[in-house]
Length: 151
Image 1 (cartoon, one colour):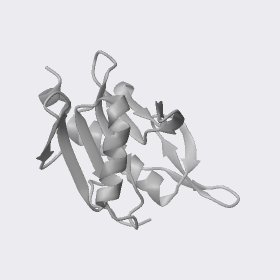
Image 2: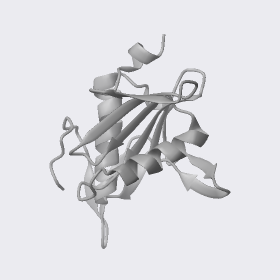
Image 3: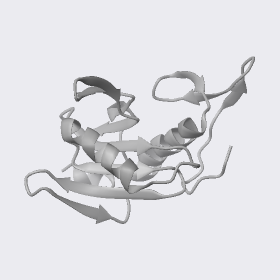
Image 4: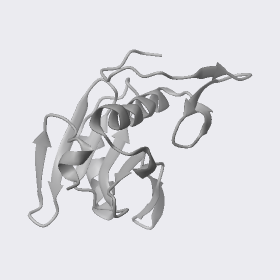
């Protein structure tokens, strides 16, 4: 798999009959190792090991409804109250983070309501603090540590 612009982590990859599988610590099972999954696994470990997000408050592919359609988030970090804190949209490294991708994530976040939004393809990362009342976004240089956003 491609080297990403995220810290490395210890991972376990196995081969099934036709796919590579990676151990997912959150779902506690082997999942197919697609390029997008490679990015998602890096982000999960980055949030836990480098930014202090508790494993038990990370939720993968959480369902939500948007425009009367069932959608799934790539990753959502929750606060201690169980409310969304950080919405993460992962793309494969070959997918550019464009204004269209940003709009998709921002649109999903209208129903989720996370104050932090992260878009990444593993090579480029864009993080914003969203103020729903003021209807503004502040671009951040990095994802805030869990202890910085949860007091």
